[in-house]
Length: 390
Image 1 (cartoon, rainbow, N blue to C red):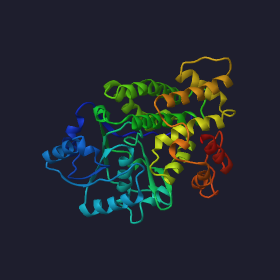
Image 2 (cartoon, helix red, strand yellow):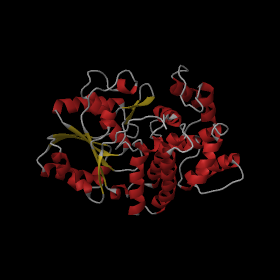
Image 3 (tube, one colour):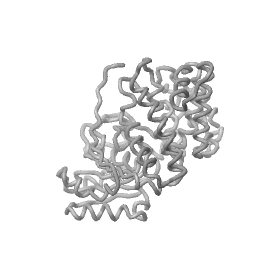
Image 4 (cartoon, one colour):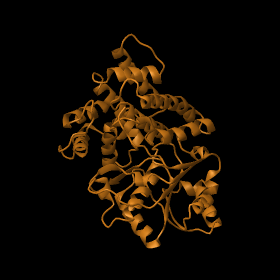
């Protein structure tokens, strides 16, 4: 275990009808004017928008609003949000939605105090020095952005989708009512399940000692998500299953399952290229196709960890570690198939001719290697993994 610093300051308000308290919660922090940030029309048709507005008005709080966040939030909307927030002089951004809305809110929060293009943060040209506080009402269990420092934004013009981490962007609070996820359809639920798994999966496959406690956290969380994820797919209104997924999404990406480790996310970087090139590809859908392919590609370097994954997540035994590693890949693919997550890039509209463009997006036209201590991925490695997914 290496030395580390850990911060997870987000206060969670968890349970039924907690969203009705949002006005009181905001006022308790002393905020006076809110930028309400959300996606499409679902929060209005569900009645959530009206609840939020009524609660804000009941506490005599001022507000402005900006909707229109899509899956894979955009640089252009962030710039628009920064201008609106500055014009209205808001002191809190309230994100009502899932990971895309929250990431867009984070980018606006960081851009509020920055004179340049907020996408500079995603390009790692500069680091935020100050940010507006962020609050969240979560409507889907997936990204864990409600407690994480990460912010991922897409630029449609260049097809670049990239993230950065900054503790200033960890939300101040998150309101989490599992009942708000009842209306999430099976496809989105499946994508969320894969996303939750992926955050602990990539942390687990970062280097660790034999007795690493965070590895035990990661494998236990993944095992539980596999169990309750199937229930949520089959029984969309099962409160306990939805609650477990919602909490798991937060714990999988607040850093807990990687404590004491130097972590990297090579599969995420490949997935970002997919949805950067084709914005309609949900992050979790891309990950579902990529994760088993990456497992197969590194099987010789990660035999023992893959075997432990099969043993702990799927409760299986086997003759030797290589057999176990192959079982791990097969069983995870079987689970993804059972929840109707995509298993190939062809299912996502990606063809062989797209691979060179994807490789260039990941490697910045061949100028960078995707770092990972076990198996760094160069241009040819990335090409091979994409081809395995087809």
